[in-house]
Image (cartoon, rainbow, N blue to C red; front, side, top):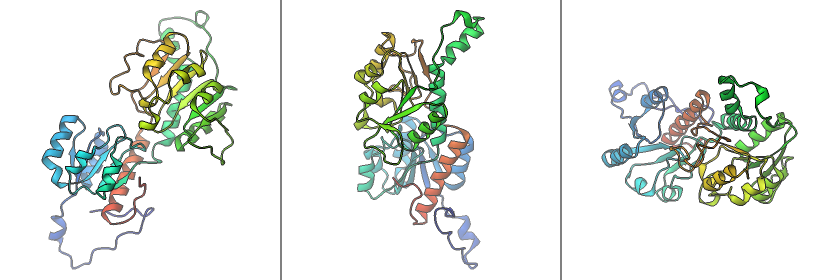
Length: 337
């Protein structure tokens, strides 16, 4: 049913010629529980290899686990959707749980490991897409592209509009200098921006200025881009104090997880003039839009799709297919958690 990816392991030997064609025809596909929304072209690829139980809504999810839990061998989810410990316990045959993207903060890793379940993610598959989107958001809010577009459509010429800052020769702080953060930093260099960062520990292999905490980084920065992982340890890492440090001329971009930014504090900072603007692909209320922000002029919002493109989604799907093939063949995973 599966061929091990050549880049990730050895190819399984061919079946002996004496094996019955009848036996091949009655092979049963492994049952896959799919907890995230995917487009039809990706569902087709999954259904070629798996018996897919598609359950992207809470009610479908509960029903699928109740009805098919005893047969489910694989789960494909993402960091936001996750997989709970009680759900893991309801699937006695589960042997692989995978996150579609890099994040897996709501996947109960501890319980899965207690059960001996293999874990993988889509690390490295959408980093360029996320980094591109981060720069698109930064440009859109700093140069006020949505506002200028609306003004132009209403016949307002430039002489009646305020001036908006340029990016070049400013300072950008990146909160979280992992793989995505590094790609954002390289793109920022192309705009002649000075780059600083805060990480759990400084990186000796990069030339950027390191800051001990988020507040110190914000105080130095003109623009602050949030690229740190989600989870309990980073909840509201960008709080009122950090926003105050960024200041009335500062701009915030978040392409990480909504939980990292205190939405109420952000709304107050923008409404009071304590922050010039923010561009967010993620927010605490998702999938509902952030009610505190939607009526503010200096806010740009996109619906958590920084990592989505045809290229990135296909790469993420292929990563899962590779991991599943390797796992079912008893080989090491391509991107283990």
